[in-house]
Structure formats: C-alpha cells, structure tokens
Image 1 (tube, rainbow, N blue to C red):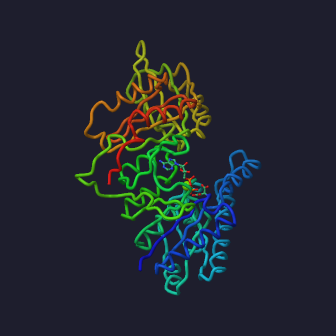
Image 2: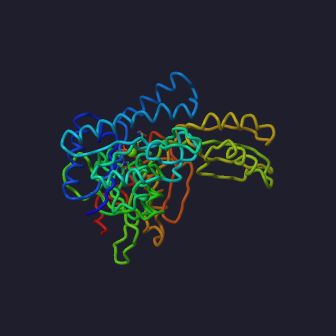
Image 3: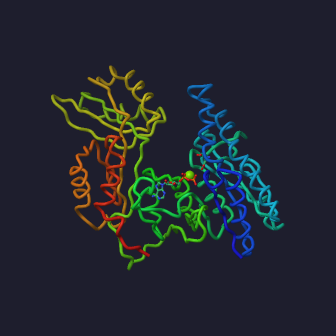
Length: 411
Ligand code: ADP
Ligand code: ASP
Ligand code: MG
C-alpha cells in the first residue's frame, strides 16, 4: 500500500461530468489499496473570471482582498469532489488551505509555502478517508487567506506530497505527459517517458506551464517522485521527472523548447559610461520589486552606454514610469521599450558537451527571417527575445531543426 497525492487541474474538474470522472479515478486508486490525498484546482476559466471581476472594481486590486476572491474557486471544487466520492461509496472529506493548514508568507497573490501541518490529513487517512485539499491557497503568517501564484495548485500538491512523504505525486492534466514543446503549438511534439529534474526546472522557469516552477523546485528539494499524466485518457505512464542521470542514457542535445509571452523589453539609451550606472538603473527597478531577466549593456559613443533588459509584461508600464522619473538623475537620453516581444528557449543537458548549438539555433531562425533582439544562455539553455508575432513560428522551426519529433526516447 502506498500513499499517493493526486492533483487534478482546471480542465480535469471543468464540469460536473469531469468531477464525477475524477471521483471514479480516485475510487480506482483506493480499490488498489492506496491512501489518497487529492489536490484540486478551480474549474477551468474560474480563476480568470475572478481576476476579471476584481479588475472591474480596482485597476490594481488590493492583494489581500484579491486573495480572498481568488481562493473561492478551489473551495467549490473540493466540496463537489467530496460529494461525488461519497456518491460512489468512497469516504472523503474536503479542506481549504487554511484548514489544513498550509502556512505561507505574506506575499499576497504570490505567497510561498513555509510549512504544512499534516495532523488532520493523517488522522483522516487513518480513518480510511480520501482527503481533498484546495490547491493554490494557504494561510499567511498574519492569519489571512493567501494564494500561491497562477498555476499554484501544482505546488500545493508537491508540497503536500513532501510533507506527507508520499510515495508519488501525480499531476493529472489535459495532456498525457511532458512533451518536447507545447503540443498545442507543435502537433508533432513528442511525449517523453522521463525528463531530468534539471531540464524540467529550466522548461518550467522558461514558460512551459505544464508544471508551475515552484512545484518543480519543491520536488527537487524534497526528492518527491513526480509524474505528469492525463486525466482525460485511460492508462498511460505519463512522464516521470527523474533525479538520476543515467550514464548510458542517450542524451539528446536539445530535449525541449519553451516559450513565454510574459515579457517586455526596456531600453535606456545614452547614460554616462561610469561605474555604478548599472546599479543606479537596475537597482531602482529591483527596489520596486520588479524582476529583471535578460540584460544587455552596449558601449555607445562618447563615453555613453545603452542598456536593454526585460521585465514581466505586467511591470512594463510601471518600469517605464519609474525610469521616466529617474531620467534626469541617471542622465539618460531616452527611455523606451516594447511589450510585443516574447522569449523562446531551447533546453537540454546535452548542450553541456556539444558546441555549435547556439549557431545552429541562430541560423535556423535567420533562415525564417526571425530577428533576434536579445540572447541569454546558461549551461543547459539558450533563450532569444524576438517579436511576439514570430513566437509559434520560431518554436516550430526550432523543433524541426533539432529533430525533436524524431529523437528516440531516452529511457
Ligand atoms: P492544468 O489546468 O491541469 O494545471 P495547464 O493548462 O496549467 O493545466 O497545463 C497544461 C498545459 O500545458 C497543456 O494543455 C499544454 O498546452 C501546456 N504545455 C506547455 N508546454 C508543455 C509541454 N512541454 N508539455 C506538455 N504540455 C505543455
Ligand atoms: N486556479 C489557479 C489558476 O488558475 C491555480 C491552478 O489552477 O493551479 O491559476
Ligand atoms: Mg496548471
């Protein structure tokens, strides 16, 4: 008998019919003799609806109150799922995040889990019940309802699996595993039986929304056995996130492609080229709690220099406003930007030992007339910033160039 945490995403609980279907899956796992803790998301579209409602009232919704609103979506699905399980003779009890309690910091709308109390869940499991926990939410150290950032139910599930020392955490979604890229964009994308933790971490951080980045971080920190599976299909092993690199494993140079529209570019032109100027500009942005991602500094003419960097799209206007106010202090000629950009990245452990991957990527993009605005690299990824209108084309071109539709399974 094992302890399994199963997480069902928005599409998987998107209708009463689907909730009943999820209940049947859980009943099957119970019938195999396993203990089950379930995490659910809100019904698909519900969190977006709640966000829109809040924005109808406040342009910049108060974060504490935003969380009060956002957390309601998951409260509906936990109750409905408990009823559906009871209907088919499976004892079940639902809990909100604060009832468990999932304790978080106070960063409303993007809170981090600090600890989880497993006493209630263990007592219910002991009594033979399925425990259903609302994903995406917790309780802050001030006793307020908090949420974990969009897609945060994945993180709830992995964190619960870590706290309960579960044998496996299964993320059920609307695709049957992790693919070489988003199969909605590239129909030829291929499901992987396994993916290494490092590659999954990069893909998630570079925009693949199949797993929220923090869920992957948690899995790494607590060595949670994590698997992505389909809730809409019967059978299938999905994709297992592995921690060991098998020496004999055939290593693809590039194993996946991610893209991210949540990008905006800021240009600061003609600032004095002197020590401390990068700090003056980027320090001010960091002080405003805005994440800076890619950065380029070019030496310009006559003792001046230019900076370009990227920020999340929602922070585009605030960053322009902030630097506009600082323009005279930092001595800039011009502050400008573009929020119709996106980042496309190739990821693969094999890049560590292969040269020429970057030039292959750049050549393929050039052949399709896609202009690269910025580049950033690490040991196992290369990202380019390009015009948003080429995002899908670039992804398809690179998928083909690196033959991701043809690579053999690695495990
Ligand atoms: P859920 O509501 O179950 O959390 P999400 O919509 O958050 O589901 O995540 C699943 C979606 O992630 C898929 O429908 C797919 O379009 C997208 N996706 C992006 N990149 C990948 C990838 N590499 N592999 C599989 N799915 C991906
Ligand atoms: N319902 C939340 C969202 O849509 C959390 C989740 O689905 O993981 O972002
Ligand atoms: Mg998700």
